[in-house]
Amino acid sequence: MSDKRTADAIIVGGGVHGAAAAYYLKKAGVKDVVLFEKEYLSSGGSGRSAAGLRQHFGTEVNCRLAKYNLECFPTLEEELGGEHKLEFAQWGYLWVAYSQESMTQLEKNVKLQQSLDIPSETLSPQEMKRRWSYLNVDGMIGAAFCGKDGHINPHALTMAYGRAAEKLGAKVLTYSPVDKLLASGNKITGVVAKGEEWSAPRVLLTAGPWSTPLAATIGLDLPVTAERHNLLVTEPIEPFNCPMTLCLDDGAYFKQVPNGSFFFGRDDQDEPKTMESGNSAKFLEGVTKSVLQRIPFLKGVRIVHQWSGPYDVTPDHQAIIDWTPVEGLWTNCGWSGHGLQFGPSGGRLAKEMFFGEKTFVDIHNFRLSRFAEGDLFPEPAFI
Ligand SMILES: Cc1cc2nc3c(=O)[nH]c(=O)nc-3n(C[C@H](O)[C@H](O)[C@H](O)COP(=O)(O)OP(=O)(O)OC[C@H]3O[C@@H](n4cnc5c(N)ncnc54)[C@H](O)[C@@H]3O)c2cc1C
Image (cartoon, rainbow, N blue to C red):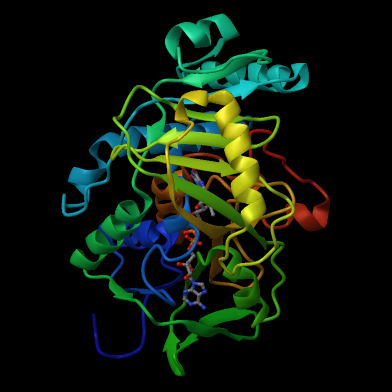
């Protein structure tokens, strides 16, 4: 890396997608890669995520990418140097349905997953009770389950990608906000970061919901908005066989992480549409009620922490992975509530796009122009 403020590729945003892209680009031999992060790596949605890993999606492209992610995770800690313990655990992921409509959707998703060799299955309430006796299955119609899904530590994952990229020679500049993008005519030329100009022929936007104001600095409109989502963390209790359990009907979920703590989360559309963090008591009350109804066993376990972070939401809850109309500028953002786990596939796609290679999965449906064309591509398995 020279001292000059030039690069072959600049990456804006040090969440899991920016850090993974830096790693994949360096691993493929790109010479000068510079990643700008306005705070610390994983300080955005990535570090605030529940970090559930799943192959349960209802669109083929997400299933294929999710399958690749799950192929990477078992050996990723070692691949990235072993400095960061990723806490990868395959405790499974369970989607429960209380309405026939939700169950019909889960069945459809599972059929698609099975056609792609994803080992998911549908379960009756009786079967759920047999496998997880602590579950209160009253009112449940059924569920979808994949035992290969699970959990990872989101900070460690992001840091591990960033560190591995650095070791390969990437410049990872934390506490270095990009003030604006730079373009000349219809071509990207670089960025201004902390008042200094950096030039590069290629710039990748992986700034989550902040991608929208950044793109606007060169007049580009991205339909990515922020939604605040909260999470509760309990004191640790003895780990037991508890898959991440999520209800499609009310968007509430719970999971145990390897240190024994439980995470509780819930979709609450009354939360402010903001990138700023902040907590609400309404969330705390609502999520506790939903979760304890499903796992009464946790009554009395103390809540020790509540945090929030932004989802970067698009109108169809699908990512935007595409070259923009500004030559040299490409995006990987808009992952809504499921982007953490797509770090490996997002990084690989960034590298393939950089080199103009055929992408390993067809990502046509993630194109930016779908919004202007009115050709949305909704993901049915989102919260
Ligand atoms: C409560 C919650 C629960 C979630 N649960 C899950 C889950 O179970 N599974 C899952 O897969 N996903 C989950 N997600 C979603 C997931 O966190 C995101 O989809 C994913 O982390 C997005 O990663 P990213 O790298 O694209 O963006 P981010 O992690 O948001 O990274 C963007 C980065 O850009 C930086 N940035 C912003 N502006 C600038 C600037 N001007 N200059 C430089 N840097 C800048 C930010 O500081 C930030 O670090 C959850 C999210 C939340 C909030």
